[in-house]
Length: 452
Image (cartoon, rainbow, N blue to C red; front, top):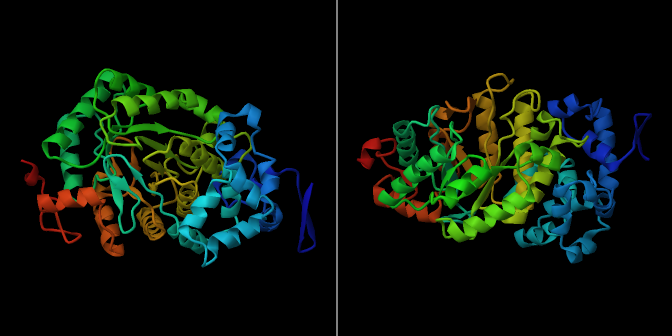
C-alpha cells in the first residue's frame, strides 16, 4: 500500500497502476473510465508518491502483465538491460531532474531512453509542467530517412493531406497541388481513403506516385488504409513509399484495430523488399490518447500511460514518422482545449524520448469545448518544443474525416514564425519550382497553375 498525507488527509493507493492514473492531469476519458483522481489534492498526493518511486519499482510492476499483453512484451524485450541497471535505483523525481538539468545533452537522453520502459516515461511526464515539457522536448531530436530526412535541426515538415469525400482523383490532385504550392508535403503525401478496397487504394497510390515522378518531388506517398489492405496492394505492384497503421497501447485495443506484431513484421519485410523509397525507415504510425478508452480496452490504465506504451510498441519497427491525433475522438476522451493542449505536449515529449520522429496533429472535433484558438496555441507550443511535423489540410477542415487540423497556411506560418525550413531535399525542389527562396515562400505560393 502506498500512502501520502496532505492537509491532514490520508491518501492510499493500492498499486503503481493506480498511482499513475491518479497522478495524471485531468482528462475526461480517465474520468469516464473511473480511474481519475477525485480531487486536486488526491492528484497531488499521487504525484508525491510517484516522485518517490524508483524506476525499479515501475519496471517490476508493469501496468499490464508481460505474459498477458503483446505490447508489454515488446516494450520489455527491447529494453537495454545494461542501461536500465545503471539507473534502476533512481526515483522518478530524480529522472525528472536529470532530464531538465542544463548539463544533460541530447545524446545523454537518447542513451538513457534505451533503459526506460514506457511506464517510466509516462511517470516522469506526470511530474512535469508545460514549460518542463517544452524545454525537455527541445533537447531531443530523433531523425529518420525514407526518401527525405526528417528531424534535422532547423527543419519542420508537413504531411500534405489531400483527402476527398468520394476519393475523386481531380479533387485529390487539386488539394495536393495547393498543399505543395505552400511547401506542405515533405513528410509525406498521405491520403485517407473513403473506399478501403485494394483496387481503390492502389489507384490512389499510382496517382500520387505518378504525380511525384512527373514533377520529380522528393517525398513519400502513402494511403492510410488498413495495413493489410496496403500489403495486398503492394503485393499487386502498387507503388508504396511509406506504409501506415494506427496503433494503441494494449493488445486488446490492437486486436480491435486488426493489427499485431506478426502483421507489422510482415509489412516491415515487404516494404524492405518492394517499397519504392530508399529507407531504411518505411513505416508510419498514428496514435492518440483515448483510443483504448473508446474501445473499452484500457484495462484500468490511464490514457497518457497507454499512449506512452503505444510509442514503446511503435519504436520496435524504427518508423519514419509517428503522429498523435489526441483530439480526434471527442469530448468523451479530451473534453476541451486545455486538455488537448496538455495531451499534445505530453505526447510530443513521450514520443521523442522513445527515440521516435514525432509529429503532432492538434486536432479537435466540432462537438468538443475547443476552437481554432486552442488549436493554434497547441500548434505554436509544440512547434516551439520541436515537433518534427504537422498535418496540412485544405482550409484546416478535413471534409472527409470531419475534424479540424492545421491548414497549409498554418504550416507556412509555423515555419515563418520560428525561422524553420522544409526538409533539405524538399527545399531544393521548392526553390527549383520557384515556390520558395531563401527559406521563405514566394508570390507563387497558392498558385496551382505552376503544375500545368
